[in-house]
Length: 263
Image 1 (cartoon, rainbow, N blue to C red):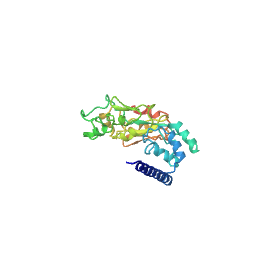
Image 2 (tube, rainbow, N blue to C red):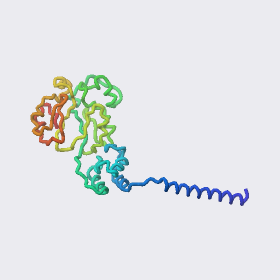
Image 3 (cartoon, rainbow, N blue to C red):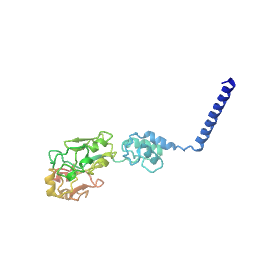
Image 4 (spheres, one colour):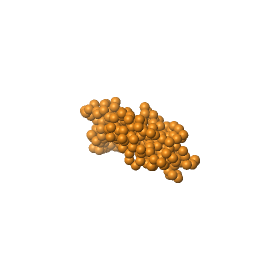
C-alpha cells in the first residue's frame, strides 16, 4: 500500500471516529435522564444491604421513593434512627422517632417440651418439612419446625436454631422482615423491642390438645385477658394476642399466665 493510501485510510477512520463521537455526544444530551440530586444524596446515606425490609426493591428503590415523598425518611430498618436523621436533613424535614422493632418467634416449643410424631429425614428446610404429614414432625402442627429456613434468609446473622426452635438475637436484628417471609408457619412477626409483652405461642388448638402437644402452649384460659387493665390482650382462635399499641408493658399478664409463655 502506498503512502497516499495509508493517509487516505487514516483520514477516513479519523473522520468516522469524530463523527461517531459528535453523534454520541448529541444523543447523550438529547436523551439524558435528569438526576435528582436529593435521590443521589439519600442513596449515599443508605447502608446498601438491599435487604428489602423497607418494602422497596433495594436501597435504590427506597432512595427514589424518599426523594419523591412516597416513603418516610426513616424508612430504612437497617440504618435506624441515625440514618433517618441524616436523610431528614437532606429532605428538609424532621425525622420522627420511630419505634425500634425486632423479629419475634411465637413459639416456645423446644426439644424438651414439644414432642415429635416421627423422625424426619430430608432437606434441612422448614418449607419442605411443612409439606410432610401433619405439617411437620412435631405433634404441634403450629410450632417452629427448627430446620432453619429463617436462619438462611437472615443477612445479619441475627437468628439461630437453639434447642429445636428459632431464637432471635435482638442486638443484631435489623427488622428487615426476611425471616418473617421465610417462615412457612407464619410464626415470626416484627414487634417493638421494649415496653410491651409478647405471647410465645401460635397454636390454635383447644386447651386439652395443646397440653398433649406442648408443655408450654397457650391454652386460651383467659387469665391474661382478665388481668390486663389496658385491654391490650385478647384470646382469638384459642391463643392470646397482644395489641402492642395498647400494651403498657406492666407485666401483669405474664404473672397471670399459668403456662409461662408471656414474656
